[in-house]
Image (cartoon, rainbow, N blue to C red; front, side, top):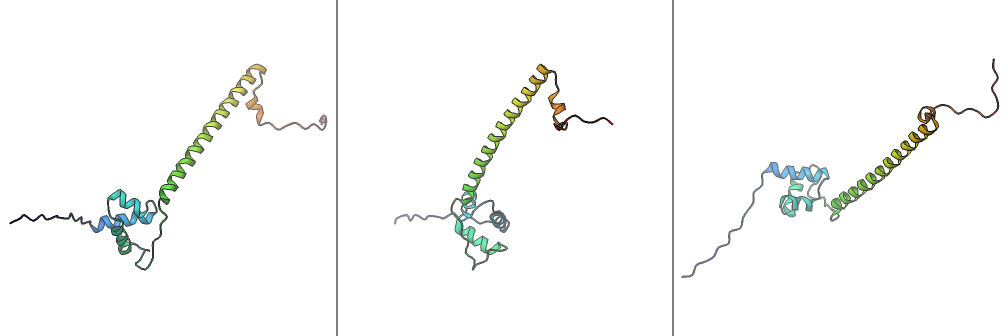
Length: 132
């Protein structure tokens, strides 16, 4: 008599609360189906069936079309944009610091408070003013 090998398949059961939470994350737009599938180690087919069952606007006859890696690409583009803006802000701050130092040095050398006089209106060059 030979021994018979039996492979038991692990079956995961998910609570309705968990399923609804994943559907809500999908509907928020933060994650794609594939990202949620990888993140929570859930089959994407199962996730689609949960979306059809629990979603407020995705029902069975609606086809869900996602561009692959679209959310990831958007995130990377935003990170690059943030880095670029931070670089620009840093350059502007250096320029501001430089100009403030130049104003300070000019004020010391010429004994004129340039910052104080900066907001005063310019005098007209049309000629001398008459005294009344």
